[in-house]
Length: 323
Image 1: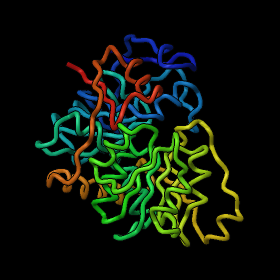
Image 2: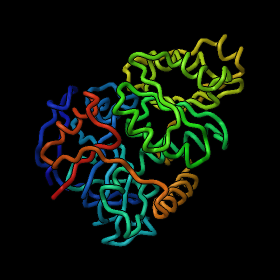
Image 3: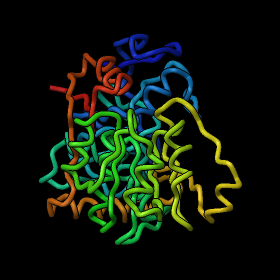
């Protein structure tokens, strides 16, 4: 099979398109004929050797894919050949065929295209895990979303509004903020020339944000921590800025706030992940959730697809598709 291979740590241009044997599924694994792969920021960290869980080289990056079942292990139940699925992977998504654990593989309805399926599990799954399971977001609360036009950020805006929150979107350009407004944000902050702290205080009449969704880290985290409401929850989702921040304990103490880590994948709590996925699929079928795909690249342009994330030219999701 054809696959994009990481032989050495580096940038997307260091990946090599080559041939690899089609993998054989283990007892609890599903072999997927990949139709579409989602491009995610962790992919760029993984090939650079900066991910917190380093893969053993050589390996094929790509943490999510959608396609059809072409094989499965002896202990797998609930799937048959030809089933349409989406899956979260450790790696392997940028290939013609990919292996996924059965507990991280989900059936998709006929009404869902493979593009939407590949855009769905990591972003919406992460956002639901963050806002509902970890952040305990309630209707009427104020939700501040950092990086609000990115893959997870835009979905956080969308799901936050669906849950009844007052959503403040923060991003770096007016065009990105306009997109966030189209997905339900009531207020916006352009943090290239506006202070997150001052604008949040202004918007909330000094009360601050009840929940902060932060996939950015760095300076944005520092500012967000200074505009938390009492008993607020700051959700640590990622570090797209490149700097992992530290939380001054005195600020957490004085606001009685919480800094909460969010790690989604589904392997730790598969029953919860499946229930969450089913609920979100229901919303998708009702037209309440719709992934925003801004860029699609053919399979032979995986490095360009990854660079679209790194240079911040993409909004929402970036996909790699096979003809």
